Each structure stands twice: as structure tokens, then as C-alpha cells.
Length: 299
Image (cartoon, rainbow, N blue to C red; front, side, top):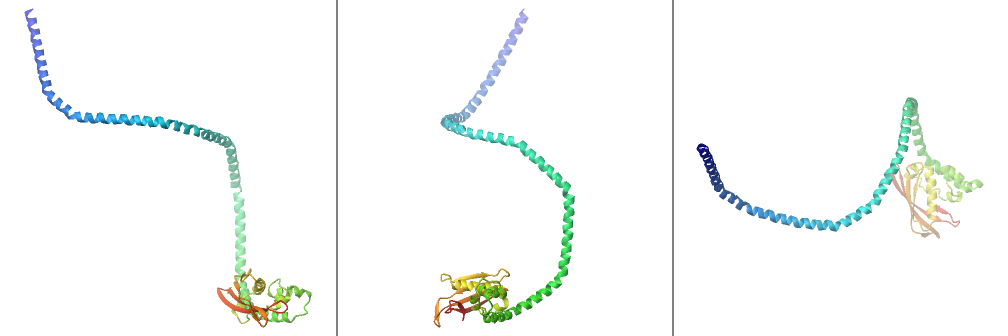
């Protein structure tokens, strides 16, 4: 009994000694803990301040959200009809899908038929190519003849001004040609079909100088068109310039009317002709006067 009591006392003493040792160690660590707490105290204060600011901002955000929520809800409500319309349109498009699919199937059938018809189409294309080759061969055979024809045409154009001068003299002297001459048909036959009466045309026979470059390059139809434009310009007091353009070639030009003057007791105008042909230009001037019969004559 005495031994047991002594052992328990020893164990109790050891426990008390260990507890004292532990308390001493804890007491030794307390200054360090206090130092660390002192160092972290400013940071904790800063964190507390930040939390306070965050709480204030959260309050402001809540107030702002509370204010804007009715507007947002109103906008959402206003968009609901649009959303419903979009849904209705989507449903309508969905209802059209079967029709579109049927059309796509028909298109696929047409494509298949086209594929079946392609061989015959290619045969027709080959036939067209063969015909084109034959045409090209014939054109190649005609080219030498065409060059000869062009040479003949060029020679004929060189002689046309001389023929025109001879025809002009014939027309002026042909007073008894008949009723058809008064409508300009004879003059139209030689100078290109024009609508001017014979008496008017006879006064314009020398409107293009026979020695000019224009006489060598203008065609009979060009001269006829030139005569018509001259009469239209002279009979219109409010017009000072006309433009003419051939329908058969690139020949063109302008006619400018000068001021009214008196010469030999007649009303006269100087006309300036700017003629363009074969990448060339020529300017001619003619005096036109109104005779006692009311017809314009080249002076």
C-alpha cells in the first residue's frame, strides 16, 4: 500500500513538473506572439476599414439596383411583344419548312434529270463546235476576197466626190425632172435619203468644198445629213450650233452659225464646219444667204 502511494505521487510529481516545463515554454513564446500581434494590428485595422468601405459601396449598389430595377422590368415587358412576334415568325417559318424541303427534293430531281440529259447536251455542243469550225474555215477562204473588196471600196470612195460634183450639176440643171423630184427623192438617191425638197437641196450642192479633205472622206449619206442640219440651224433663230453624227461610220462634226449680216441686200450667216473623220479634223467656212424665194444658197 505504501509502494502504490509512493508511485502515484511520483507520477503526479512528474506530471506537475512537465506541466511547469510546458508553461515555461509557453511563457517564453508569449513575447513573440505579442510582437506578431502588434505587427499585424495595423493590417487588421486597414482590412476593417476596407470592409467598411465595401459595405458602403454594397449599400450604394443595392440602392442603384433598386432604382433601376423598375426601368429594367419595364424594358423587359416592352420587349415581350417583340419576343412573342419573333416566336410567331419562327413558328411560321417552321411551318414553311416542309414546303421548302419539297422544293429542294424537286430541285434534286431536276438536277438528276439534267445529269441524265448532259450527254445529249454535250453532243449538241460538239455539233455547234463543228459548225463553228466549218464557218471559220469558210471565213478564212473569204478573207482574200474581202481584202480585194476593201481595196475596190477604197478606190470607189476616192472617186465618190467627183461623182457627187457631177450629180450635183445634173440635179441643178434638171428643172423638168417631174413631180417626184420636188420631194427630194432624186437628190436622196445620190446623196443619201434626205427629206429636203429639191429646190432646197439644189441651193446646197456646193456646201462641201470639192478640193477639201472633207470631200474625200465624207460619204454621200454624211453630206445629206450635213445639208439637213444646215437648214435646221439656219431656220432656227434661237439656235447657234448643231451636232451631226453618221449612223454608218465614225464621221461626225459640229456646225456653228455666225451672227446675221447683210450682204447684197440679203440676210446671210457664216457657217463654220468642224468635221471629224479617220482620226483627222478639218474646219471649213461657208457663207449662206437667203434669196428672194426664201431659200438658203451657198455663196
